[in-house]
Image 1 (cartoon, rainbow, N blue to C red):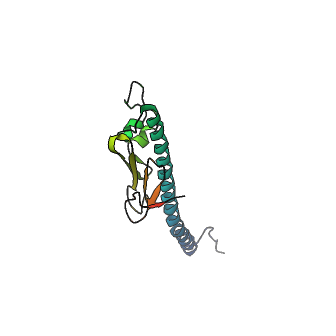
Image 2: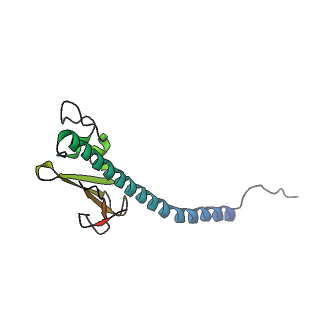
Length: 151
């Protein structure tokens, strides 16, 4: 009598591999969309943090900061550091977004934009805010004061 070998046939293994590939093909795009949504949420949160830090800076020093780095830990604005945001956010890049801070005339206003580092990879929307605290978004290009406010 012949002894039967135990194990899986080649066809059975190929079917299992094909099923795993199909599941991966469905899951990976959803994972990438989730990562973009998380980056966008982080950018909005960072804009809110910078708005709050700018108001605190203005209350303390009488005007808005000249640069984003004036708000960060270890800045040399005065004898004590402003210490209102961390150095990662103060560097201008965080969670797939680049932040650009522009002071207004006489440092009595400012504008702040957030743009994805790589469009449609790290994020789809561009964001804008100023001393009013309203955060605005645009999917077609750089956001400005005329863009749609987010809720």
